[in-house]
Image (cartoon, rainbow, N blue to C red):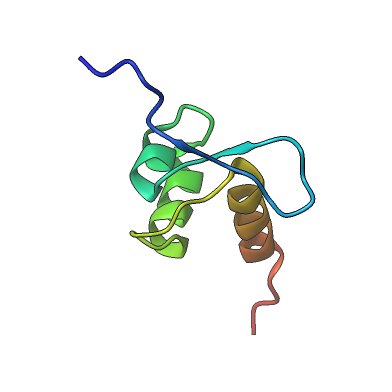
Amino acid sequence: MNTEPAYEEVKEPGSTAASPTFTKQQLHAARKYTAQQKDMLSALLEEDQLYTEAEVDHIVNIFLLRVVE
């Protein structure tokens, strides 16, 4: 059984601390998000991309604050 974390550590340029990144599937399985937020994640995130929690929170906030025409 693999005991390593299921995410990759990435360092942003100029940053000394690494932020864990997650796949769309990992974020969808996370307990942090409500069912409504998970629905948004399914629609907003790309399958083959990794995201930090801050990036996901930003994407969700931008979606929620958009102007509806």
